[in-house]
Length: 193
Image 1 (cartoon, rainbow, N blue to C red):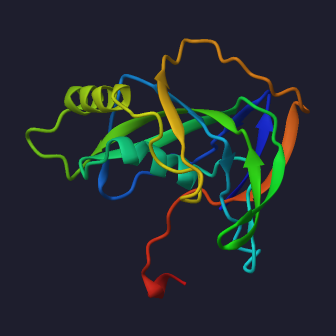
Image 2: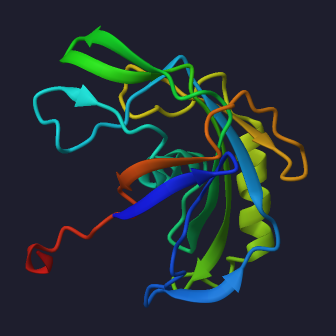
């Protein structure tokens, strides 16, 4: 977990850019942008065990899940660069099938990301091939693809150009402390804890 904040309406993912033993430094030449929205979103916080209380923005782990729902192969590793907050952070109290849910109402984000090739890439894997596969799959997305935290909250995603200016309705403070957010997945190796 890492502590993040919004500065100038952009949630910048500050990573050490560590590569796993399976990764090389062959990066894409293209930075992708995915516009993500929905009626509601809930990314449950672990400290609230008896009810679903959401983080204030999409977590990087959930963002990776949406990207990987479009295109995932062992030959590539997605790298998230920024999460742009495009709508005000508005909490909403709902009653779900699992009990009370504290969700986000009408969230909108833009995710900036790219990928790198891993050591598991075969002779037929190339940066160009994976770029074109991702773009082709992202352009064919249906109206709702993936979920915003819980299965009750479908996501709407659209591929956009990184050069396109973002229409933002966020007029909150230039810096907003979001507290701790889960940043990356941890292996399920019990010896690690």
